[in-house]
Amino acid sequence: MKGTLEKIIEKLAYEREMLSAGAEYVAGADEVGRGPLAGPVVCAAVILPLEEESLILGVDDSKKIKEGDRERLAGQIKERAVAYKICEVSNAEIDRINILEATKLCMKRAVEGLSVPPDVVLTDGNFRLDIDIPQQNIVRGDALSYSIGAASILAKVYRDALMREYDKKYPEYGFAAHKGYGTQAHIRAIGEYGLCEIHRRTFTTKLSVKSERNGR
Image (tube, one colour):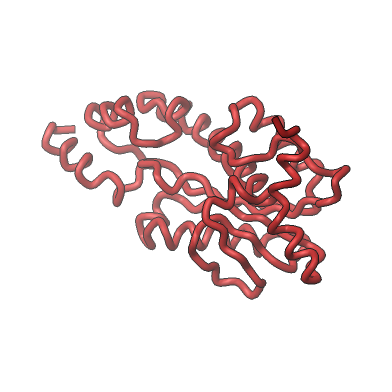
């Protein structure tokens, strides 16, 4: 079995390609929360030192990492980062401009909010950002790129913490458990209590109609 360091080094192929082309600062950018019925979409951008002695072991697609490990890694990423930025776009804005445009806007804000301007940006997915910085899209980039994986961890830890705070305000929906995704428990809660302030109306049209029919 390959060692953890070797696995991390394998995730540096895209970054090293950019460095060999003359880039000094390579940023990774990713989002969390495109699919939930409630809450914002959250994006992070991060520039990490790429020397072998500075690499953070365990960085990967945030969905593959246990919650406690994600939080530990997020702390290390923030400590070692050359720069990082986390942004969110609200459910109301998602309803106004649609989730794809909201995600692109959120990621653009994160990249442009970096205190150190990157020379190139690696982004997860297959869409382009409206930025004046060279960019490369990588499908499944959070699993294939060290920098994008680190961004996915920052975004996931931030959004999960935010949804736990919303759970305190709206305990009947169970946001701390499902983070706003459309689980059976969440859908049942919507059927019983209707929609709350942070629900995405464009994601819950049929559910909200059902709630109205039930007199909720």
